[in-house]
Length: 169
Image (cartoon, rainbow, N blue to C red; front, side, top):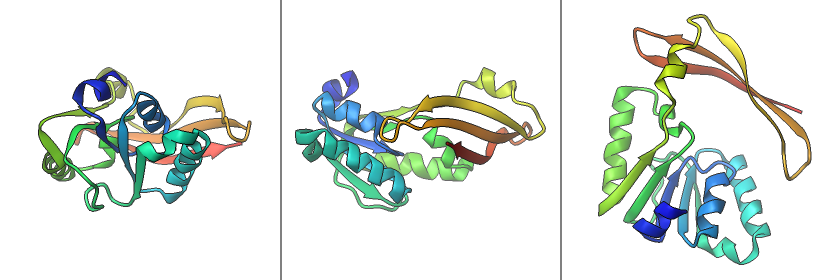
């Protein structure tokens, strides 16, 4: 919210998902353009916006590849939250993403990348391991959700790969 107020009211969020960050930003007064590959996740974000009433007009949602979908700009603030940048899985893809974000940015824009803590990554076992990421009650349905991930670390390549994510009710 504070960054949106400082850097302008047009914000690009890459990896919008269900709108967790997007809703916070629109409540802070920003106009947010959200991009996500998943139509199902964006449908949930749209439902949350619709329930928020008059805030729905402060957000535009785009489904598709973040490097290909045409969005309005330029943006003074571009957010890539919750380790989304890791989905650009190769160095070439990351460089392409950064160049693409630069083309979408205003001259005095700020790019914010949320990246994993390196110390935690080095503690990851070399062999594939299943981990409980978090457990929470999903607000729309009231169901208990357990999020688990199966990851493997390739130390020489400096690559942590999520092999699978499971949502269990």
